[in-house]
Structure formats: structure tokens, C-alpha cells
Length: 93
Image (tube, rainbow, N blue to C red):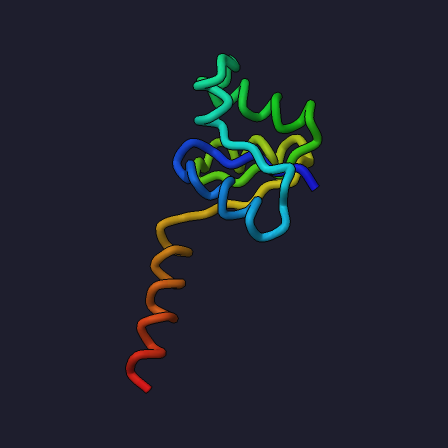
């Protein structure tokens, strides 16, 4: 399973590799290595051409994935907040 992590969550690629997803790449690291991935269009094309699941916070990227039947996981501030709130609940018990 190939995964592409959007720039906002650089470092998540390393965590995913440690958890059994070795074919995970970071948009930020790809840009730093010389890939031309500065626009949403380029990121979506890269993910599509390499048959990758895109992990993103960008609503426009999510729309692009939906419109083009691409696999995508959207991370939002709400999902992070929900995770933190769930974890904080454990301390109340």
C-alpha cells in the first residue's frame, strides 16, 4: 500500500513507516528532493500516477480525490481535537 502524506503532516510518513507502511512518502520531503509538487494539482497527479492514498488536511485536495475516484484520508482540526478529547477523558476516570 502506497501512501502520500501532505505537507501539513510532515513526519507522519516516518511514523507510518514504523507502523508497517514502508511505502509512505512525504510531499515536503519529495519537494526538498527536487520534485515539483508545490500545487494541489501536482500533488493529486503524483498520488494518482503512483496509485497512492493521499493523507491531507486540504479540503480542495479531498474534493479532487472525490471527483477523480482517488483514495484519500482527510485529517482535520476537528479529528485531532476529537482524538485529544477522547484521550483526556481517560484521565478523568
